[in-house]
Length: 93
Image (cartoon, rainbow, N blue to C red):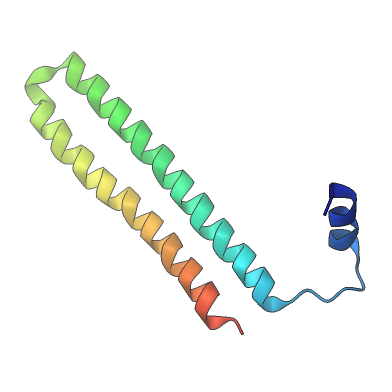
């Protein structure tokens, strides 16, 4: 299927869109964007923590503790995205 046919299918207003297909699309977007945001957030947190640890090595243990707490909260957002995706997959019929 080339792009022209795909565009025609997507723009066809007479075709019925299956709710299950839209749920799968939503699940893919939820887990994809949720995990991408979590990965970017964890990368930024780790980069800034290592930068702060390099500037002041004597407080690195405090920074490490705060970094781990921040990563746990960021990871919980990714788990929420997974829960939303699983709910979309298994509840829409």
